[in-house]
Amino acid sequence: MEKDSFTNVRKIDENNIEDAFKLMQSNTYFYSRTQSHILTLDECREDITALPPKVDLEQKFFMGFYKGDDMIAVLDYVEGYPNENVLYLGFFMLHMDKHEKGIGRQIINTFIKTTKNNNFAEIKLACYETNEIGYLFWSKMGFSVEKMSKKVVDGRKYNLVEMHITLKSKINP
Image (cartoon, rainbow, N blue to C red):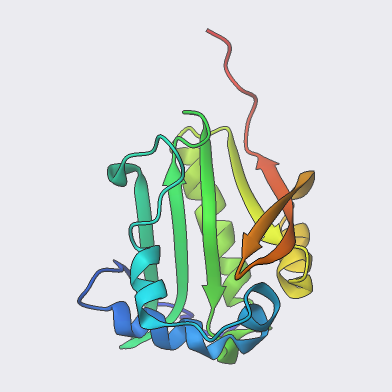
């Protein structure tokens, strides 16, 4: 693993959206499998406030992981969705130059531990079936398939693999 893989974490907003956009542009693999157009800055900007149904903006976090001045990863999650015991991981991307160095595993292991320590029982996510690298990563991280669903992007239907990891037994009142 790369020594000191990240030095700080900052919320992504208008002040550092260009960093996130640059990082996201680096991952041509992901976007070639999930949409039929080139990523735009406006799409990246929209990701900051994109929410699932019946969720408040206060529940959403879009974070950038930095090594020095360079953003090396982005992580988007929503607390309490689809129910209060669940954290929904909407997006995770590592800069392409940082793949296969253990950095993604380190970030997600820390995220899982922190989520568990904050009393969430489960983390859910959806991975494009066409994103074989992402699916393999999430499987190695301990996430298992819950069900399949569909998503339409640019008029094209994609299969989504809905995955989850249980952090602790749900407490019955």
